[in-house]
Length: 178
Ligand code: PRP
Image (cartoon, rainbow, N blue to C red):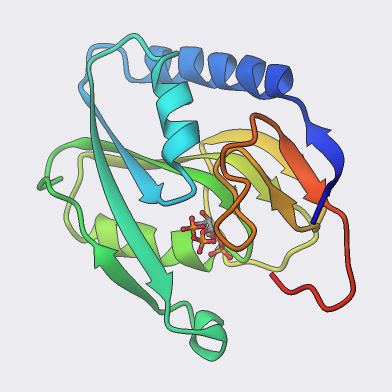
């Protein structure tokens, strides 16, 4: 497999995360923030975004997986790793690399809201356009991208390519699957 083309350069990502970090720092000024990364994809966005935030921040991670294609459409996901921390009364910011069908986030937001955080918001680097998804409020948006299979900057193809410093599109080859 080869990268067909670069969709978003490393510099564009860096500029965007810097702006996002400034906005987050302003919005949460005077508060403590808990950033929650959704593994695995979000680990790179989380690390780079966090370095543009200049208020007190703590970190936690969740790992989730869908039960399979049929149940994914029902929005049921399995929690493989839950938060280490209680979030009641905390300001929680979920960090995602990409929002595709939106089902992961829809489930997570519902799941975390019942734990009574002081606030719950979402930051996502990529939002796929042209997808019918449940309503999700994305407070901090990076880039809108066309509905293509993208890799890099945390996003994988068969576990690889997460370390690419840019977002790319894979060249299509016969017989390939996501
Ligand atoms: C990706 C991404 C989001 C989710 C978004 O994770 O990191 O968590 O898919 O898709 P959705 O909007 O259709 O729910 P993936 O399941 O590929 O796991 P990974 O992060 O471990 O690669």
